[in-house]
Each structure stands twice: as structure tokens, then as C-alpha cells.
Length: 161
Image (cartoon, rainbow, N blue to C red; front, side):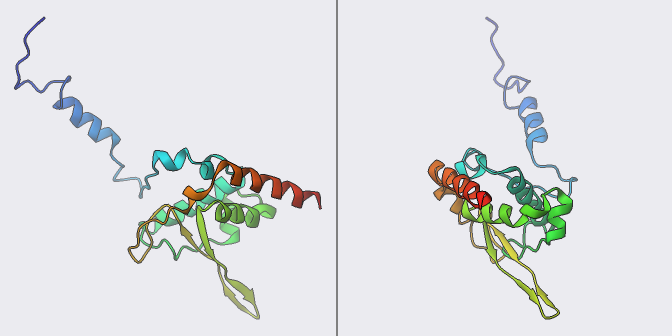
């Protein structure tokens, strides 16, 4: 077995290989923003059991959040039409948002419309810090598999009516 030179930082140690790995695994600088999601979040019951429309609505909210440089969480405004243009089925936009709120991924401050004035819903993603500098509340961690099943059963019952 050959003796290695301790000063040799070739492809098998923290030299060149580490630099390449770091270069290719860091978030891109030129892609218009990014948002990290933890493994715990991606494996959670709240995230794994999302319906297609809820997943699309969440993705649209994340796009809005990234578009503001991740500094407006808690003041995010996405309109009904923006959800639809992103691919959320028009008649299920409300259901998708309710599902996200039920599973703890989203906090919604309900707006109202009428009499010529419109006050839109304002959203906060619970898995990222808010605009005031408060850390993530991670309310999605409270959602269990039983909670997710209960949501599905509730939706099925409502559709039977």
C-alpha cells in the first residue's frame, strides 16, 4: 500500500473534491432566489400527504416568498387568479388553502371583499421565519398521520353532501 503525502490534497481528501462538492451543492446565485427545506419537513406527515392542489398552492406561495427575497413572510399576497394560473383547480383553491392551514404549513389572515373594496388574504409559511425576524413556528410538526387521515375523511364526507 502506497504511503500518502499528508500535504497532498487531491481528489480523495478535503482538497479539490471538497471544493467541487461545495461548488455544486450550494444554492445557485443566478437563479432568482432559493429556499431550503429540511429533510424532517419533507418526510413529515403534513407534507407527504398533501393533495395535488395543496402542493401546487404551496409551491405558488413559496415562489411568491422567494420573489420577495424571503423577507415578506407573513405579508405574502397571492390572488385566486394567481393560484389558478399556476395550476390549482379553480373550484379547489379554497380547499387547498384550508388543507395547508389544517396541516400547519400555512397561516392565513383572511381578507374580505365587497362594497368596492378588496382586502386580500395574507399568508405566512410556518416553516420559514417571518418579516419581523421571528423564527419559523413549525406548526406542521404537530400534524400526525391520524390528523392527515382525518382531513381526507372530512373532505370525502363534505363531497358526499
